[in-house]
Length: 365
Image 1 (cartoon, rainbow, N blue to C red):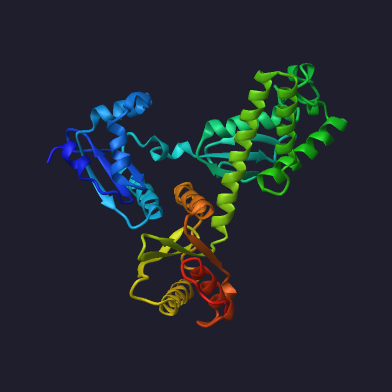
Image 2: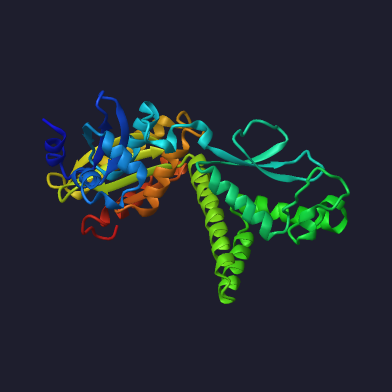
């Protein structure tokens, strides 16, 4: 069967596709909600494709695919296969140096904000990340420094004002005194921002953007729009990391079709269990019992054993899970550990009942 015939026979199902070159090497892995439509898009109406995609298409000579029950499973499988195979066109995950951290250097003349690839290069530093885009991190840090007037051009010169101070971009903390006190307050605000505790710096950037737009200074407005977007991206990533490091017990229930649901149980960023539930042959009470039993069996048996440090290699799965939960067409539950002390905890029973109400007309319990 040639490539054209394979594309024509692809199913309209969620899954992962693996593009191959003339030697049979996998050069690209992608995921799709509807495999046939997604793969066809590479070969039809290609005038709007980026140069990278056009080059990829020229090298595609064959393909394989793997059908999944849900789009979420396709996302997770794609992530796993990219890390395992490292296809040449999947640039996003091919290089561990693509992961970047923000470091607050604590052992300098005064605390300094830097961008680094290594989160273990200095025990005297405070780290945030990992982040997947160095350019986004650098733009965010530059925007914060410029907006807060801490863009020092000679941070290691003691008691000497830098050129940026004369340009109005630096408070003059190099010389100490009140400027250094103000600088330390700003660094505390930046740390609070990256912890998600104080977003006033982000508000400052948004205000600068709106002020520039009101004055028809569209170049400055665009610059602060980019700064604002970059900082917002960092805060989103910190939410992902925090959510995953809490090692939550997550229950996902997603519709597959008119007659089936998919139950997925996740601990932190680890999928513990998944099963297909037949809503046609089982009544709501039976499904309730199956779901509650799976929850207690899986989460009570796993305990803390599945806890993993969130490394740069876990960040992609964490992002997929977090984004899926926030935008899912299905429903999900977060199960507190205290609900797992017994197999018949009333709060767990009520939570499962509420989850099933979105799929069945159930009475109030």
